Image 1 (spheres, rainbow, N blue to C red):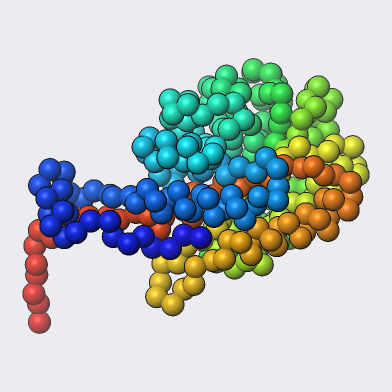
Image 2: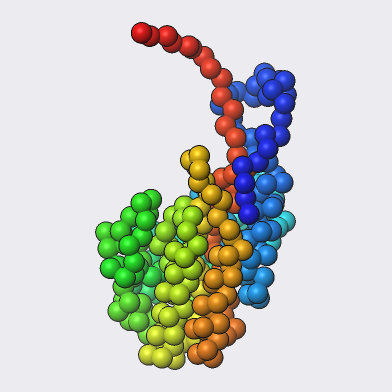
Length: 296
């Protein structure tokens, strides 16, 4: 689990670097990043095929992406720039997940060209993509639980969010994709952000697993993949505890056994898209004091 990295430089080294690099600049501790990924992977080791699709928007830096690639991460992209960066860094096909809102066709085309997992945010995207470029081999939908969940302070009330589909829209979307020949399916939600409560993160898994069962019972679709989103938080304030990611993994495993295995829907790949949790504790901002003001 990530903790604030020990500052990796002496004061003298920082002053030396500030002579070479224009301030402000960021320094990241590679060891802390690798340990965060390894801890998350270990917590989900019970699930074959688990992968964290690192949210590129969190730290779109090629050097950091190279470290993450070495640790087995994929990427989570929401724009063509992030898709191109993933491509340049050597991420392949379904190592990339593309979730975008109000998306122009050129971005869908780029995702399809790369063989990325395409996660549709709106029911209208089915006809749009089918007409303009054809549906990909595998289609995922983003779920918005509306009044079923309260979200949290950072991500807001799902009812007021522009993201995702209702349950009725999901069922219609999956059925339409079935009729258009799609045979592989995924499911996704992003309900909380910077969450330090194990039970809230596990509840997202329960919500999506129950929805996967409902979709299977109504449409006969067996989900290949469920993306629990990101949302695992890091402490920012004194007194805040580091989340026990092992407990998160164990809690998700328990509800997977209770719901997915009990309904005969295993194996089903479970993935995440954590960003902040991976790089946040490893980063330091170095800046130079230019003025000092005294008043009263």
